[in-house]
Image 1 (cartoon, rainbow, N blue to C red):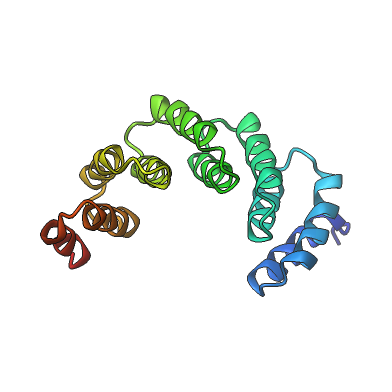
Image 2: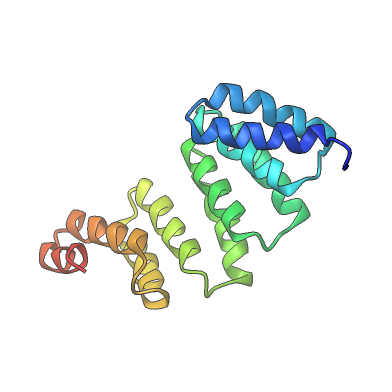
Amino acid sequence: MAAPMPHVEAYDRGLALLQAGRVSAALGELEVAHRARPDDISVLFALGNAARALGLHDSAARFFNDVLSIDPDRIEATVQLAKSLAASTRHGDAIEALQRALALRSDAAVLWVTLGNVVREQGDTANAEIFLREALRLNPKSAEALGGGADILFDAGKRREALKLYNR
């Protein structure tokens, strides 16, 4: 019989609690797992998600940065990092993180979508439209790019184009 692995059990409980919407309790379990395995990407990512859900955006950004220090190619960590930074009004840092990732993976539509959304939050709808169009070129069926692109076009007064995207 295999020896019990408390950090794995704590991680599993933490994920179950996250899915149940009990984020504060999940954070406690995930912290137990983190103390046992501080470089475990899955635990760090889950901690970042829990922190974001609690509105602890700076903490979330630190966890996602930790993930990227271990695995710099982890696109979803870059996306979550950028969202956390933008939520804490650090848009410039979010844009820099996305630009670094795009320098390595310009074919990742989700990075373009996220960049479009971040610059849109700053009021730069012209560049947001360019970035979201690039995301759609790369992945024409991306629901996030379709919705974000439609919203941007609508905000820019391009209602017919927006409706086409909304209806896709």
